Image (tube, rainbow, N blue to C red; front, side):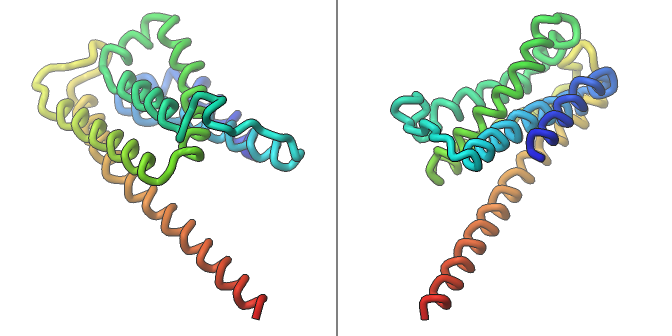
Length: 200
């Protein structure tokens, strides 16, 4: 199911590109996250398949050069920052090489995000989630405060909506992440309670 979901998201992001790239907000806040999510789901599907097939996976950070997920998360942060730059969005519309980098690179970044977050300890996750949210909020404020267009391809009004969207992302991501952590901790606590009950 994860492979199917990843494929559908990728097809949606590519197939609906004429619509999703008409507005700056849809381009930055819908299409690019769809490509990223496709990569995350593909990595999860691959991990699940290997686990079910009992395939030994080399997950030693020392050998994979992704110790504690830090190098991978740095690359993910750089990719996210790149696609918050208005010039990158403009170039993706007029230069096929930049467009190809977006359509190929962002799913790979999503794959890297999935494996890096799994390897990272909580303190590293908190740092990178906080850094991304701060970056998103700052970019959103800049978009809102600029009296002129930053993207040649998009109108000033759409730039304002993109700014609001980036600020909303900066608020919603940590809330969603904290909620998922709370659910995981709750499930772990219930599992421990059930185990203790069975032992009695």
